[in-house]
Length: 342
Image (cartoon, rainbow, N blue to C red; front, side, top):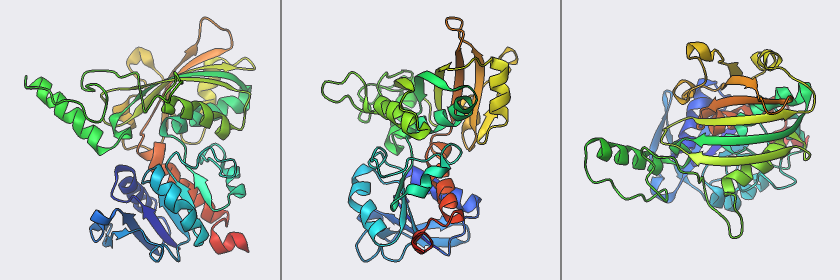
């Protein structure tokens, strides 16, 4: 199986390669792709040194699988070309997610959606991803009428330049020096909270990130009748998104029942002993693939509402790990290239 990793030198692309190595992904050849300026660069992959290539119509031939994490523009330009050349594309950008003929898949939530793919599978938004992993067991057990999500998102979700911006601003503040002007975010991120993740479109009071969370949650769960409201904020944390979710169920569900459900759910780890200081933290989620859930409690304003605190590593489960898990499912279910055609 020949695998292309597009955007291999970026934060998520390099994490994808690391996850593939950790999980002993069964590829006979892995080819990293990046921009022209990165072509020829060597990337360590275990005992191998992989040479980065630039995208071209000739270079993309002969792949069974292509993992994309190079932004929406590259996905729009090259996703269908890879698929037409015979590869199944697993795309981490937002471009394909809401296309009706493209399944939007979280490995633990809706793997059956892969059966309908037409050469491209979309990876959800990182915040949506960790949230639906926690919501799916609740949906199956008690139904869900409404979710109100407030997110606290790490700067690594924006990219390496954002990580550097936080570092430089924090260092300057602590050393009592002039703080560098923000270039990635509209305001200083160090020691601050920005109630804006991504952009505001003309005439819309919600950001593009908030719209993603609302739309993608319904598509992944397969329920257009679930009400979803989101407020997304950027916080001065390097890695790990946190979500406060208020979940209104259709049937009664106690906090104790919810903990028991989530304790046996795939991809979830319950960390819920607040009296002893045990609850999910971004520092604890960093480097893990499980979604951590805690602070599970009754909403005193509604008898069928629960509050949950959900934390996940946005670079791993929020992006890279799920893409690799989807690739594994495509292989196991014979949904790659020639096997699918047969």
